[in-house]
Length: 271
Image 1: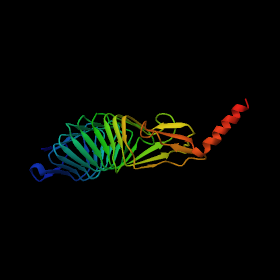
Image 2 (image 1 turned 30 degrees about the vertical axis):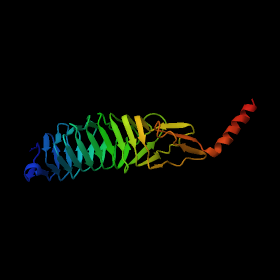
Image 3 (image 1 turned 135 degrees about the vertical axis):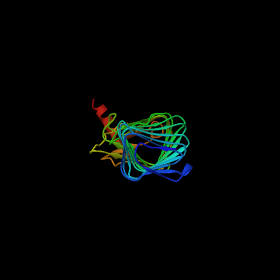
Image 4 (image 1 turned 180 degrees about the horizontal axis):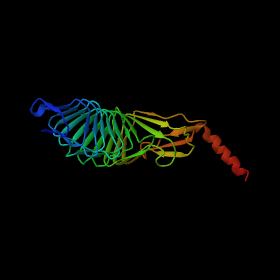
């Protein structure tokens, strides 16, 4: 079944039926596909009163991209969504009914992506944005992932997998909450792939500074590669707690520790 609130034309029959929109669409009504394909050839704007829904085994193609300001609902069986998506503040992408949705394209989430219990969202393109991911379902990133909008904390209500092919970028611009990227995961965070850390806006952390970039109920897995930025002088990174508490620390490099201890001893003797 395909229903629509914007002008399009169907092709094919039955389960293979496709509804195509070749011109730009500003959706203020309801567009729904069930066990079929919904294809937009140009840019789609889903306005505050709009609703786009995929049910059953469905394919939705946003060949010109989607700017979402209201609701995109995906439920039952499996759905594939291709094209770049910008989920604006106030916009919601909702997965329900033990569904699996694979997003093939870049995602900027500044709204809400809700993955319900038993559902699984897979992000196959570059994913970024300051929006959160409530719901207790599973979220998996298999390409680039950069939380926040340079930088920011992003929360997840369920489990998160940073896949073996993913590259996670965490940015640091200060030492207080909100000044550096953080993943706040209520369930299990399974890490993999590569981790890259960058300093922003000329920020240089001082010695004995901690950054808990991962705050999870359970932390598992390891990164195949960790790329950390250079630090000036005698400072270095301590990643020994990365896989236990999700923390990176800045410390004096080991070669400087004896000199530091000697200096402290001499200062004590002068008292």
